[in-house]
Image 1 (cartoon, one colour):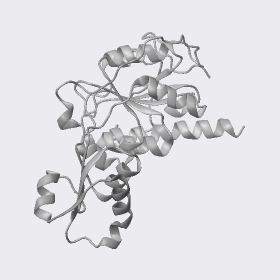
Image 2 (cartoon, helix red, strand yellow; image 1 turned 60 degrees about the vertical axis):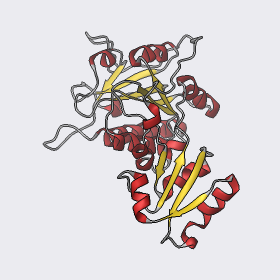
Image 3 (cartoon, rainbow, N blue to C red; image 1 turned 120 degrees about the vertical axis):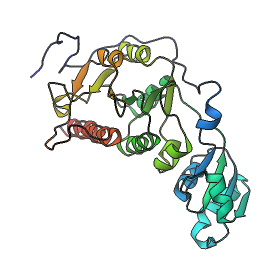
Amino acid sequence: MRKDKDSKGQRQFGSARSGKQRQERVRSGPAPGTDAEEAGAVIAGRHAVMEALKAGRPIHKIWLADTMQRSSIQQLHALAKEAGIPVQSADKRKLDQLAEGLPHQGVLAQASAAEYAEVEDLLAAAEAKGEPPFLIILDELEDPHNLGSILRSCDCTGAHGVIIPKRRSVGLTATVSRTSAGAVEFVPVARVTNLAQTMDDLKRRGVWIVGTDVQAEGMVSELDLTMPVAIVIGNEHKGIGRLVRERCDLLGKLPMFGRINSLNASVAAGVIMYEVVRQRQAALSR
């Protein structure tokens, strides 16, 4: 069953739209004066440091707890040596001081600032794979643990990237890096000045904007997610903002059977991402 636009201009159900190719590139670099602190200059944790090494992230130095057995970090040592990165032993007090409260498992790395992608890069990644775009838009997400978890889910589900606003949103911090279990090294994140304008640009390029809203008429599972989509996840407390909601082509909700009417942002994002995967896998098998 398909429905036409409702009174607010959003399609609850619909089919794909052809988009006009946009000539200009959407710039999405770091916010001036803020990213030296935000960009995850310290990577904490054995797994996060390993993934950064594998991804070729510029790393200046690695610290290892002086109590660690060398056999447990042989691969890390080998990768660091191959890349010419100095490895230094340190006691727990020094590591705790450098980590500034982050759990580090005895492994820390000092890395260059994380680089933000451009929206164009995300679309190019989809094109290179021969897949319809599968993007995640985060509307003023504040919790770095949520962003890290979402990046991890993006990597697991094959999403082509994440778009976040420069203002009132968490960036690529060290906590995000650790929570993502290394996914921050592989999932491109574009940071844009105007999220609403970026959504308009995506729509012109044929990408459907899908919002999540507990007040939506239909379920997410009833929407066609096999077409080019950008899934919008709202703020942990306020949900999707008005301007962003008005630009959504489709609105859907997740079924709720308990007394609490909403999920954690990263959990909801993960559920919806796997619904995209389910639909696209089913379409391929037909």
